[in-house]
Image (tube, rainbow, N blue to C red; front, side, top):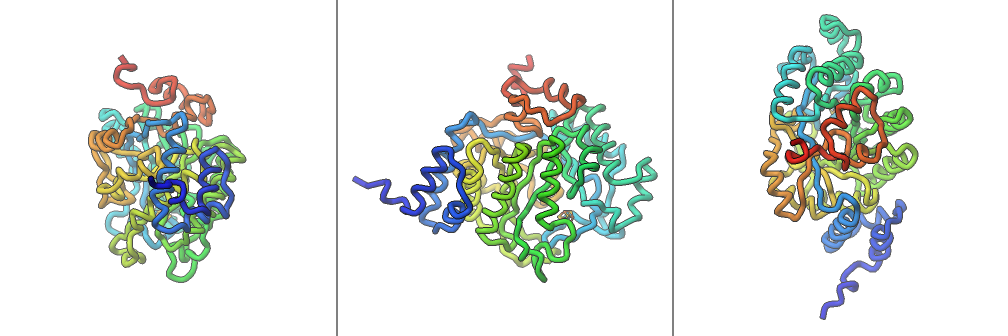
Length: 402
Ligand code: SF4
């Protein structure tokens, strides 16, 4: 007979025990988990899955049916891995007009989408003042005003629920955008300052200082805005950096309760970037990070990894404690990773159910935020959420609609 307990590294066993009994792990415990060797990976994945399965989320895995609106691909920054950003004179540089925005939103509405993800460069006018001419032609004086107006247009004309990702924001700026958004987002990416050294992923960037990104999350917390954030793995950070990043996010959530989701996103190298020769984050490393994120952030945190960045192996994420696939679009591509097509929802449903889970659609505000009445949203958005969700906070099923 095999003594199963003896197979678990004795250093990890009490840590896993504490995590599974709902206790909060400290930094050293997080480091021990993330620095454990490959022989412990399946144990970490088992423990992370157990922790997820023992919560109210049980066997439900969520996704959001969305459209992706790259409002402008001008940006004040230049990150080492980014192909989204363009200079004003570069082929492909584009700022969407209100007509373009509405056209895509209406198409998304007709395809049953519920979320409009507005994703754009950070304060492009700080680097490229010429964008102000374009914005003024549309009737606006700043990118922030334009984001707010487009969010409102989408919400009022189509009922799609906007979720904006536009970089660093102070409280005044969040106050302009938030009334027309159901939630907002900013990736922390990493707390590692080594990434800012010569040649690093964040070398010479002005928006990737961790303290500024954390401030945006705190600003949103003070204003009661639900935020999605996350870490980008494989961009030169250490394993300990990942745990440090998760700890910073956890502290903000402990203070404000506004972190609705953490994305664990794997780096994929792209041609024509400074980091084109850096190897992609490997799948085993991703699985370990997902499992540690679940154990470190606790049972109730929503943890996502996008399926299109590893479509061939994404089913295994479900064995490492994630509970969300993020946004999937039947209409628009992933403009940040344009070479990686979204899987069809029917395929995602099959992958999910084959692993023993039920795929459920959510809004860009997570079901636990909707159903708990923790309304981090304005009254103009609230009614639209209530119209399309059931009491448990998920999008109504066909049966519930009829
Ligand atoms: S990753 Fe974001 S902040 Fe960095 S250059 Fe691209 S659009 Fe700008």
